Length: 322
Image 1 (cartoon, helix red, strand yellow):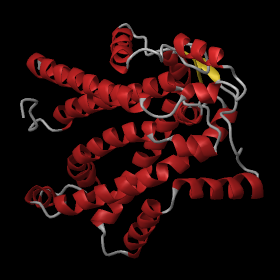
Image 2 (tube, rainbow, N blue to C red):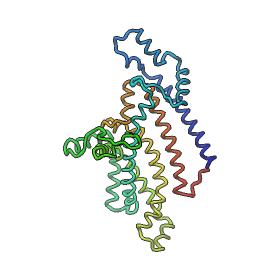
Image 3 (cartoon, rainbow, N blue to C red):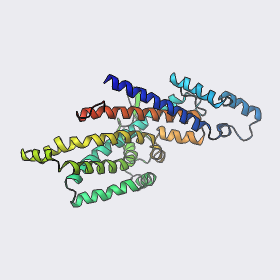
Image 4 (cartoon, rainbow, N blue to C red):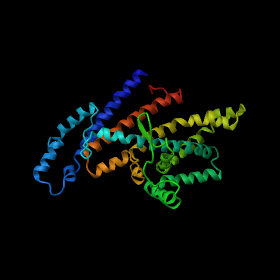
């Protein structure tokens, strides 16, 4: 275990280091943030002063070395717009995005797994065919369009749920959370469901495919021959063996939900990292963009590590050395 963890940590450090080069250089060769931050009538002296204050007058390699040194100390730069450390601004928005992402993935698992099991056990039933047809819609419909339809239906027409914002929050472990209040939960439902629709379809189709492969296996026939009930077979044999690919997808998709929640957060005015990065891109706030991308890279690396560890818990046949 220690040897495996050491190898994975070295790989993770190498990946993160490579991404610092790609992200920093890619972001810093695009656009001119000074032209966005200064008014059109700014003098040449004012422009030079701002360029020097942001360190943009130095060579790109020197800026990167300075950034890398700061990153090793936990400093990913200072936001041009907020005049605060970029990482601290992002960390203020992380709870909102994590709350939304966790809610979306919980919905995907709680809805997608049972529906996928049903469709896999009874593939020729009318209900299973309807579910598979519905999953195609979940893949096909654009997130922004579904979000707008939800707002029009549930907020404007029916008035059941709020159209945007995070609502009332409550503090837990020093962090503000929406799910702890009734008003916060009402604000969370629509964006979480909007973000979860694609994932529900993905999990459902994956579980269905795995179930159809597992049901004809010999050990399932043996379990039936022993007199086990269908419910017991599904819980103890079918479901357990479908969890490994499901955990792989859920783990990787959790990272993508965090990274690509931009559309949902923008539509529902959810104050998370996605909305922050959109605003930062509009203003060419380079330190904020770089810090956001690096946070996403680290999250993906950590999630992959956790998924690999969960493999061995669910299936002892999977060994870390392999």
